[in-house]
Length: 226
Image 1 (cartoon, one colour):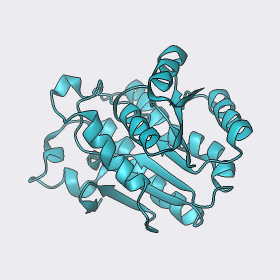
Image 2 (cartoon, rainbow, N blue to C red):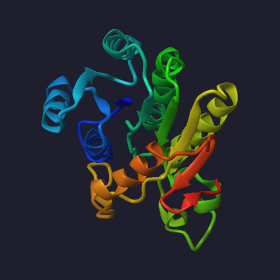
Image 3 (spheres, rainbow, N blue to C red):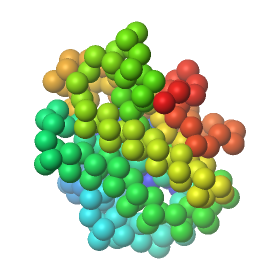
């Protein structure tokens, strides 16, 4: 049985991804900063819960330690936790990168020893085409008209981290995913997006793909230039 950890999984895309992977037979650990909401989400899904704040070393260490004690390995890590800051100032920049970039490093570094015990370890980072230079400079793409500088910059960092991790750890598959515009708490102000379940299906498709792809940014149609 595949052992999976999903960060930020108490709502939105992470929650629906957890639901679909539980249905596929994965042992899913719902990582959430808010213990009450995370535990409720895990109970509803038939998953397991770990308190996990991607900005806190002790929280991440404890969550990974719990999975180590219970499972002895980790097969799939989904770096899903994210924030969308609309302001453009130093405080917003620190919040954006703390979750969308540094948080990925913190969780991935903590989880790597467990991933390396897996027969087929994989790390998927939920990124965005907003972090693609190709997309934001293409006038035919909607990303080119969205003034979300810090979200775009932090998601570009997330994709670059994916690429660099794939080079540093060739025994682990690292891929980033653009799940599609999704109606979540983060995007409510823009009134855009499809149901989270549809975007989660894009993440799940990559999670169960039987190939050796690594170091890529993908969407539902295949590899994206960035």
